Image (cartoon, rainbow over all chains, first blue to last red):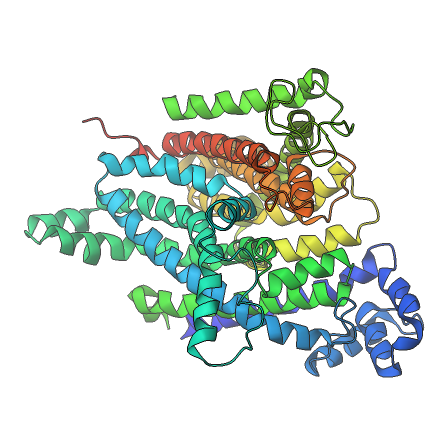
Length: 326
Length: 272
């Protein structure tokens, strides 16, 4: 268990670092946009909201930086992330909790699909090295060099403008009320097709390539040779001997590339006006809505850390060496 | 050097040339408006025009420089940081290694895009070099991680032990014994960083957090998106810039394959 404990400790430190960065950034960088915004909103802010913005952005000049830090943590623990300027007067926490499920659903499902699909293709490409599968590499390289958001633009222009097969924006048809009904769920799925495919297509290449290269390396190992000598079936050698070992770097890589994938997914949401965190962030940029932008950053970081912990548990199940350590 | 690597280097050289001469060979001023509103590609405007009649071909040409400068500056800065952190951590080991590894892992795990968006939008002026510096700060961690692993495997080799036994100073061993053996890894890290930086810069321009006063490929896409180019069917507005990004990215990735195959002979193509 020491492995998991160490990882959990690392994630806690990372979370602390992210929160501290969030605390320091508005205090270190020049300019005082939040003050300007508060002045602009003037009388419409009640004293509680004003106080929490003061705490979050360090506008209270009379307190030492340490006191500000303690107050900041107290706010976070209460779940108080300030008020959003874009969605005034909704608290940031409320905006985030509405958009969070959309992002979790879209990014979660597409990342798992891309990982499984890419790993499987990589296993075959590595195993059948020198065959036509090698041609997959330049194609996927090209696809992975395309920015997520541009692929999204192309997808919209082809499949919702030129051939109107799927809706171009939104999370569900306007006019529908979010509820647990067949019609609503159908509409959600229909709206998720284009953004989902965009994310899968642009992220799958990395998994294919990583897995292929590991397979090629592993295939030359002695234990694969022994498995062959024992006369095991190709399929069994490929999956139970080679792939099982080759997948380990992919899983530890999964953890580290997740932050990158999530970034790309946020962009896809912006392009498709998908009602998740990415679109919220996009609206926040336009309005220089710092409480909202920082809230999005914190929530995403938290989600990525949790996903990382899950990947670690998967690693633990696949690699007996990590279990023996404990 | 195989065909793939040569192709990659060729494309890269082409864009590097454009970065230098793009401004001179551009047929129009990229910001100048004209009466040819939203016209598709033609002899006069190879890539068509925008909503206000600006020539998109000229915008792509002039915008190449901004993209390449950010890529280069970030590549150099981030590679320097990754060598500093990665090689030090790998060579020294112990507590220094624990601390530095943790630092680079934290930078890897934290989602860079939202963080950079916040930083970039808080900066009062967003000129190209400043943005490049900010991007570098998030781009070094991956290289540092790989360099650390490689350094650890070199640290106990005989030639390093020999240098140590003959009383060489630590920094001398690192610079003259260890670093030359890491060149392939450093090179591939550099190329990877350039890809990352270019993508990030274009993304930041596209979402509108970097100032739009200088042209780069992301700025073109920003204007295309904010003027509803998609709904108007003006495909020529966003296709060329996107293809350039993809081409440059592919070229860099191909170069990296070349370096990988050089460093790991098992990946080389099997001759049938």
